[in-house]
Every structure is written in structure tokens, then in C-alpha cells.
Amino acid sequence: MTNSLRRLPAVHRLLESPRLKSALERWGHTALLEACRKALDDARRLIEAGESPSTATLEEAVLAEVQAAEADAYTGVINGTGVLLHTNLGRAPMPTTLPQSLRGYLALEYDVQAGRRGQRLAPLREKIARVCGAESAVMVNNNAASLLLILAALTRGREVIVSRSQLIEIGGSFRLPAVMEAAGCSLVEVGCTNRTHLRDYSEAITENTAAVMVAHQSNFRIVGFTSNPTSTELATLAHDNGLPLIIDQGSGCLYDLRRWGLPHEETITELLGAGADIICFSGDKLLGGPQAGIIVGTKAWVEPLGAHPLYRALRPDKTALVLMDHTLRAHEADRLGEIPLYLMLETSIDTLKRRAARIGRRLRTQGVPARGRSTRSTLGGGTTPDETMPGYGLEISGGQALLDALRKQTPPIIGRIEEDRVVLDLRTVFPEQDGVLIEGILAASVRAES
Ligand SMILES: *Cc1c(COP(=O)(O)O)cnc(C)c1O
Image (cartoon, rainbow, N blue to C red):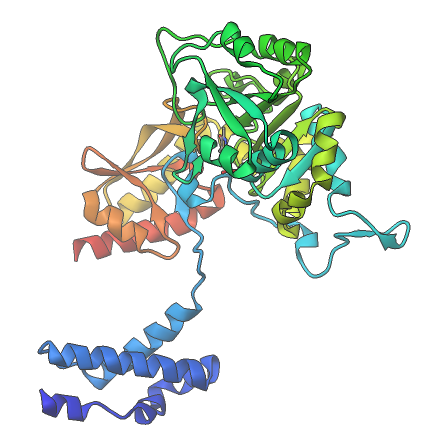
């Protein structure tokens, strides 16, 4: 063992080895030195464990190390899961062509017409309001930030009434009672888990009440013997007491979801029509845009939020503003096909079947047993829980080994297992990814078998 240890090259010898010459030019002295040290450390550990790594292995380890350090921290993936708003894969997919203003400088806080300083949110505020049919709007970093801003600005030190059926936890780290506490208001719980009546709310109103609040149940559903007052009833009660009705709508639903075979949910416009004063939701769920929190409602309640001191800490960055503008323009012009989420929602089963047939044929000629099959796609992202829509994709025999090999491809292909077969839902795969998908499946099949 000591012999083998002694045979390991000194770090500068390894660094200067001919095979690493081009790597040295590409990644520079410091990065390569670091990688050599790490490779030698690993080799020492291997020798101590009774193995005998060769010089070639050492050089390969150095190359793998510098390449890994250069890899994207966030890898683009092929989403074969059929979950359109996949929380772990970034919720709403990003546009495949990025707007010009994401390159170089942009007039972020500059009024080009007047040639003087402008307001960051001003160009977008009216557009958000128009798309949602609201009087006024504000955009922040995410929907948790929307709630924090609304509650801190309008209800601090006072009481907010919420039904016990709506004390939600979303994605582990978002809990409504905790956000309320952080915002400095006190939560007044009313009703029961399955039923809350209008009188429960009215009996809880005191001179210290700041608002009546509704939170969308999002990722779960209470079924059976249930009831909750309608939004109109709650708005009337709130207004009769001089209070605002705040609704955390969550998903940002602008359209009747029955259009895509999903159950209807009250849309933002319908909630505003029912009398809601302040509504907030995420930008990267059904709106199909970047991560953001959108707040819409009446001028009197919503306008001051943009001037609150917390706003500066919660405001969105320029990339989110540009991407949101891009998304809103498509909604406004009814060009939903320009928003990747809606492009996927609107793809017909026939189109998916044709793609599956083409991909299946290519795979079978290379000896991979793949065939088309019906799937159930889901919206995901905490929207419409338990609801699915028809999808179509591929079924490949191979089980867990193939699923793992697919995930290790570049780009990674994420699928799921059903009855010991790998299933890839094509609804969430961009058609221009079909070629890369085929290559990835072929390579993964070879890998899974060896
Ligand atoms: C998704 C969701 C949130 C959290 O939104 P983020 O944008 O992830 O901060 C809060 N409330 C409801 C009802 C939601 O559906």
C-alpha cells in the first residue's frame, strides 16, 4: 500500500501531464490545481481501501472534476411526468425564446420618452390590472410575499378572520398562520374543518377586526358534508362592517378550466365581480409566467401597497418583470399558444399520438421495445388536486434501472414507473425535444442493460 501511495505523482507533475494540457488552457491554473489535489486525495483514499488507480484514471478524475465545477447549477430537463406545473421542475415552463430585453441593458427605472428617472413597476401595473379586470395591481417576488405585504400593510396589530378549513400549508415551508404571525396580525379562526357559516364570520367581527380573509385550499379538498359562504356573501358582510375581503386565490386562474376538461374554479374576474377587495396569487402557476406574487383589487386598497416600506424588500427582479410582461402580452392578445403552459394544455391527443407513434417507430427499429399508451396528465403545482386530463405518451419495458438511467442522461429525462414499465407523458415534452428524447432513451437503454 505504501508503495502504491509513493507511486502517486506529485501534484505539479499531474498538473503538467500532456493529457491535461488543453484542460489547463481552458480552465486555468487555479481551477486545475484544485481538481488535481482533489483527484489525488480521492486516489489516496482508494489505495487505502485496497485499490490501485492508474495514472489514466487520475487524469480522468481531474477532467471530470473541472467539468463538474463548470456545469450549470440548474440543469434543463425533459419533463416526461405529465405534471404541467411540476414544483420540483420550476412550476410553469419558461419561454423557449427569451425576450430581447433580457440581454444587456434595459429601461428598468427610466422613462425613455421624458428622458428622466421612471418607476420600476409603472410600465407593468396597468397591464396586470387590465389582464385581470382590476382597478389596480402590484407585483412582488412570490405569493408568500403578496400575503406578507398585504397583511403587514393593512392588518398589523389587528385581527384577521379566517375559516378553520383554510389554514393551509403549501410546499412545506408556507403556512398561513406563520405568515400571519410574521406580518404582525392576529389570526381569528372561525367555523369547523368541514363547515363554516356566514354567522361564524359575523359573530367574530369586533372593533379590532382589520379584514375578512379567504385562502384557497389549493392542494387538498374537503368533500362530503361541507359548506362555506359564497364570496359575494363574505364581501357583503365585510363591506357592511367597513372591512376589506382579502382572497389568497393561489393559482391565478384567469379562464374557465372546463375549456381543458378540468372542473371550474372561480376565476380572478369572478372573484372581483363578487366584491373581493384584494386578491393575490402566484405568477408561475396558471398565469404561466415567472415566479412572482400578483396582487390585484380596488385602487383604494391595492395602490398604497406599492409605497409600503416592505415593498422594497419584496419587489421582483428585472428578469421576472420582463418575463411577466411577455406573459401578460400573450394573455391580453389571446395568443395563449405563446405561453408554454397553455401550449401544452392545448395540444390535442391526436397530435400527441402522432408524436408517440413516430418516436416509438424510431426506438423499435433500434431494438428498444417502446409503444404508445394513454396517460393522465395533471396540472400540479397545488392546483386542481386529484383532477387529471387525458394525455398520451410512451411505455417502455425496463423498470427502475431504465428510469434511473434516463435521469442520468444529458439533459436528464424525468419519467415515472407504472406496473414496472417506464412511462413518459408527451404532453409536458416540447415537440422540439423529441429528437433529444429519442437519443436519450436509446443511450439510457444501453446503459440500463449493462
Ligand atoms: C401556491 C400558493 C401560495 C404560495 O405561493 P408562492 O408563489 O409559492 O409563494 C400561497 N397560497 C396559495 C393559496 C397557493 O396556492
